[in-house]
Image (cartoon, rainbow, N blue to C red; front, side):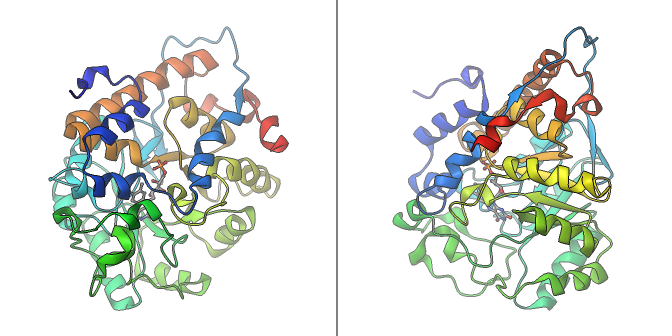
Length: 368
Ligand code: FNR
């Protein structure tokens, strides 16, 4: 007795339904975090330390939360972030997310380890829909070069290089279930032989190059004109270094708590990063994205107030897709839209440009 879609009133509701209806292997892969999952939980609780300081008597009859990310206009200040193995949750895989994203004019990041081929996901795009590529860098750079050049040719508008995964974290829930699902075939990784004894994540990631370093950034800049964004930056020092390296953006992220346990949450790092950038007058030099634990429009608004360009959302769309297919993902996006409208009004902001740090009380972050 699965609840009707209309009974999902927020993004967390999709998680509880998905848990009931998903296959064990898929649930274990999507829901797991690294080690004791402290960081995965912290991604939520960090948002709970930030409170609003709303402004009253602002005309909020019309509320506009459209924005621009990496030069692309989008209806909402969030994007569908890259999550591997879409077919574990839905037989059609990532193209379901593509279609839903189109309906709501939302940007999608395509994972290197998608279940659908890269071309299938690009072919599912409609009109001037915007897609980005998430890149795991292969030890064989000629493979990586081919993937990047192909993505640029196919119209991808951003290259998100994942930098928090020189080795995949231990997701023990995932390791405990036998990894033998049909949906787990990865088409685009260029990976070699697959060891299935260590869970889904380990099995598909052996090609990733742990020697990747700052020295490689100029090479990426020489092979593509796409904006380059480092996904998985976790401290101020590395954001400053990213500016110096001339990349266009960073994602403050701990990979949804799936990599280093006891990594801090992206939102908390953001609260340190923006003042450091402003101090140097660098806040316009780089776009700062955040992901991890975003489930409510209030989470999104907090990130924007602090200075983020946009936020990524991962698991909720996977759960919505696994439980209800495209309709589920569209409803999840609609719920966020409705929450955005209401909460922008309640905080006293009629556009994204109105959101600023004075609308937040972040003393709880310093208090730890
Ligand atoms: C991910 N994430 C991820 N990131 C990445 O760079 N490459 C990848 O292949 C994947 N795969 C992946 C699979 C699954 C099942 C999850 C849940 C996550 C991390 C993802 O892009 C993002 O950082 C987090 O999902 C954000 O946290 P929330 O929104 O899931 O809490």
